[in-house]
Length: 534
Image 1 (cartoon, one colour):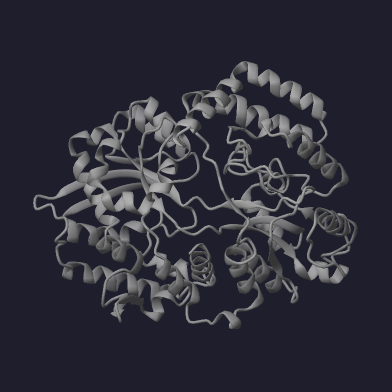
Image 2: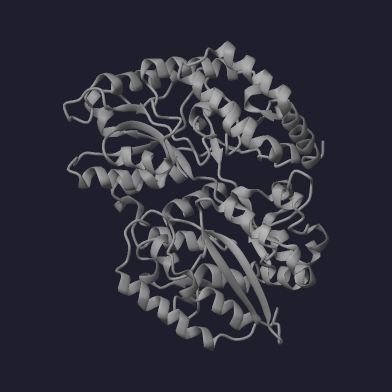
């Protein structure tokens, strides 16, 4: 099943960067809007007197800006009588925007915590626990599944969010400039020694052919949104199964702790420090943003990286468009470490998204019923396929989207209003499949698109691990900024860059533990034990 789902997502995104002509998107957007008045009331849920739900959420930078102009929310209102009005905010400084909203005492009915954090909203008394309302959301509970309930709960054991569900493990992958390796006469690396050979060869040769043998970055890294994540691919190579922010892990004995407590972390740090001194890893790893990583991939300045699988296609196209006809970013299996570890983080299937605020306490049951309807067969069809007779038809019991809707994958399909990701929902495998194939047979995919597919559905299969949560305990919320983001992460970066020794790193780390980091570790360990029933 996982392989099937991974293949489906891989194919569903393959052609996402090539947009339909804007007029085509606009035509279908208008067709869908025109069809909204023809929709029938839902027999499963309808508010005869109406229901108004206000919200505040994150507008992803990669999505169309005119969300309020699509069919999705008007269709929900026509079918259920519930009006949903979201105040979409940009990702930058969203946590500050949440804090400002809380200070205004003018809370919306539903809110996304974003980087402000669920636990912070809980401590502010701003949102409501949902544990006592699970009987009102049978569709959502079924979508989460019994074996993933712990992923839905927060560190205190309670549920505070309506989730979005994505049952597809693939997302990021290690990528290599295959054309550079071919020119160097090197095969794709299989062992740690192979990887070191590749990185040294990229360092020592003018692989991009611009006459400067010093400007190639053998292994490019990115800082992540807060500087916490920059070492993901190398942590995995040392067998450290890290959380999304690369700050927490679960040891072999089941103990939840910080990665710095892992028995291999000292050796990891010593190795990465030596690699930095050799010029094998990105000298700007501590400050390079994701967009900057994409830029150096697109402009022939790095030879290996780990990022979203789609970049294998997009950066290959960018390199070719710039005149490098043989360019190919090849998706490969995770870096094999010194002990033979080869693993990568599995995409989180259950992601908490919307919280119901105290301002909506008098209508919490009605709001929950609306969300649960979105996870019902009616809601799932609307979310994934749009409106029957406009964007899809039923064929032999299966929703089949019109070719124009999926001709270029997810980007334009979503621009028309389907699979409205910032609002969240239950992604369907069949919708992925139709979007990704887009009428192109696998054997006919160009090398860049095939590499994207392989990065999502092939090379990482069997090597995924479920990421442990970053448990937002009270202690974590209190100390994160001071002791993690600008504390131990800065010490790690200084150590990697050779500004302090490994022994000095651990001495300073122990001092941070005495200042409160040990409280974060202890609280996380206890919370994790509760979540897994320990």
